[in-house]
Each structure stands twice: as C-alpha cells, then as structure tokens.
Amino acid sequence: MISPVSLYSYNKRTAVNNHSSQQYLYNPVYYRKKQDTVEISFKGSSIVDNLTFKFKNKIFEKDAMTPGNPNWAKAVQRYSSIETKENEIRSDFERDRNRIMHTEGFDRMRFKAQVFPVCENDMVSTRSSHVLQVSDIARNISKKLGLNEELAETIAMGHDIGHSPFGHDGEKSLKNITIKEGLPLFWHEKNSLRMVDKILTLENSKGKLNNLGLTYAVRDGIINHCGEVDDNFIKPRKNILNLEEISSPGKVQPYTWEGIIVKVSDKIAYLGKDIEDATKMGIFTKKNHQELNQILKKYLPDTDCQLNNTYLINLFVNDLIKNSSPQKGIGFSKPVYELMKEIKNYNYEHIYHAKGVKALSQKQCDEIIEGIFYTYKSMYKGKDTITYLETFNNPYISNFKNWLVKYSQSSERPPEFCNKILYDISKPEDYKQAIVDYISGMTDKYAIKTFQVLTKRNVMP
Image (cartoon, rainbow, N blue to C red; front, side, top):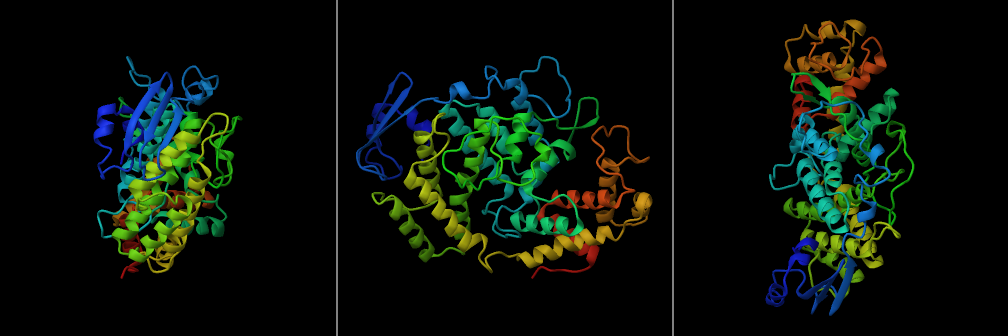
C-alpha cells in the first residue's frame, strides 16, 4: 500500500520505474508540485484509467488547532491541574498523549476484544491494535491536510480507553444493567471520557497519584468519536459544551477538525480490518469475498483490485484527502461514500449481528457481566462495606475492595491517593456505579476469571 505521504515523496524516476510493478495499488507515472498543489497522474490506474487528480496540500492549515487558532485557549484548557515541569519540551497535546499511553487503562486494551471475544487466534485484532491503527490513519490524514497531527493522534489513542470487556457485546450487557438499576446509561464513548477524567491515574514525580487532567480538545474528541458516520462531509461544531452533559453517542460533532478526522479514521480502520479478521477466523469464505468484490465493482467498475484491508484504507484515505475542504467539510466522493456504507451494512449482517460467528455469544457475555455485578452487589453492607469485604480471603474480592478504597472517602485511603473521590459508599447508587466502573475496566480474560471465582460457574465451552 502506498500512503498519500509516500505518493507525494516519490521522485519522477522512482514513479516511472514502479509503473509496471504489480505490488502497488497505484502506478504513478509522475507527480508535480506547483506551490501548494500536488498533482499526481496515474496511467492504467486500478481505480480509473489515465486519472490525474489534484489536491491542495495542507488545505486546512489555517483551521488547525494550533496556537494561532482563536479557539486555542479553550482547546488546551485542562479538566484538572497537572504537575508543572521545568524545561518542558512537549506540547500540551503531546503531554496528553503520553499521559494516556502510560496508564493501566491503555495497557489493558491489549487484552480487550475488538470484535471477537475469547479468540484463540493471536493474529486477530484487539482493542489496542485497533487504537494504534486509528491513530496512524488519523495522523497521516492530518499531516496531508495541514491539521494538528499531535491532537489527532492523542484523541485516537484515548478514544476507546473506556470500552468494556468483550467489545460491543460487553457494552450492551453493561448498558442493560444500568437501565435496570437506574444508573446513568453506559455507552463506551461516555465511559472513555469518565476514564480519562475521573478514573485513570498517574504517579507524579513526588509519588502522588493524580487524575490525567487532559485538555478540552482531546476530551471532546474522545466522547464525540462515534465512528458510525452516517453523513458525508462533516464539520466541527462551533459552540463550547459541558462534555459531561452529552447524553447519547453520535449526536454531537467534535469541536475540532482533528476530532472529525479521528471520527472518520475510526471507521476507515475497522471496516477492512474486520473483513480481514473474519477471514482469519474462517468466518468469511471465498463466497463472501466474491460478494464483496461485486459490491466494489458496483461503485468502482473500472477497478481490477480485490476488496481487502490494504485496498480500502488506501482508497478511503486518498479519496477523503482529495474531496475534503474547509468549505465542504471532511468527506468522500459519492461512489466511495456509498461503497463505504454498503460494506458497513455487509459487515453488520455477516459479522457483527450474525449468529454463531463468535466464540462467546451475547447470552454468555450477559451471564458473565451480570454474574459479576450481582455478586458484588450482594456484598453491600452500607458504610461498612469495605470492612466487610476485608473478611474475604479472595483476590477477586480484595481487588474490588482496593478499588473502593481508592475512589471513596475512607479512613484506609493512603495519603498518596490524590485522585478524585467518586463514591459515597453509604449510598447504594454510588456503590452500584462503582461496580459498573470496575467491570468496565476489566480485560476479557480477567472478567471471565472473576466470574468463575465469584460464582463457581463456567460459561465457556
């Protein structure tokens, strides 16, 4: 795959020499740079013959979230204060990226499912690999459009940090519990904001545990990243919102162009990758790929390529760069946009909503998460709950007890815990919220083990 950046960096001789090579999706004959305009010509292109496409390089540069932007002061305003360091060489968004990457929540994404829970195939995507892929795509697009790469990368690194165990199936399980128990509705974008604002902590140079205190622009991009892009040509909103008051996913556009890029990159990253993973799992057969190629031909009849992850990322990225502008917004040409929608629908039918394609069914997922929740709920003893939990010689109860100590006003709370207090254990609603928060941070395998130990049951085949 040749990225837009590598296309731009070709010299004429390299491009001509690669014209006959079959290893590249595009065969550029020449490129020319005229001031800020990049012109690339394709002879016998696999998308359209004899295409010359032009796009203005860094066309969004004046709209980037950089110090010259009139909204800069709000964008870098922090949710809570962080340690001031002498001779700091990082930008505000670089500091946010580092603070996200060094949390336990970021580490745990390695063992959270992207689509396929309890997958024995080590080559199938995890939540962590997905986050890195979104980050790579968002940064590349931002670089070409002239947006703030650091901001886009940082939003991408944190966008799924609040995802539940077992992917969207686990999200449904926790959502149903919050509805039944009268708690704030669980949805992973909102929980990602809760994680970076109130739950995840870092140790500072004095040994104190503090919350992350991320900037507004990063926090905004995280909660508004919903990747289900149902409208073409998206623009950022202009008004400042209290992000904690956003009540449902996908209803509010990000505040920055970089947030829009992450929103679209999320979808670019998972569509082709999920097809690739389904093939590795033996779910997609030759028949499925024939059907997908027919969909591709329907919208791009001149292509001689196969519909796969490599092709789709290159197609979507290049088409987006070519068709986006500050006037129109971030979007795709009509055939590519319609192709994206139909691939998404195909994946929903044959992967996400198909029965029997996952090792862990929705019913099993519900049983695990509900089993953990209601077992912990049964241990509630009001203000004496922490003392009661200490009587158990069980690491899966002790770990939950330690969670309560960290986030509750307790005599056992060590002085180095300087993070926000979230729960008043004397209130049943706070205790139930603590259980939801605790479960949402679990990895898939830790959730399964916790369920097995607490309930003495095994739902796995």
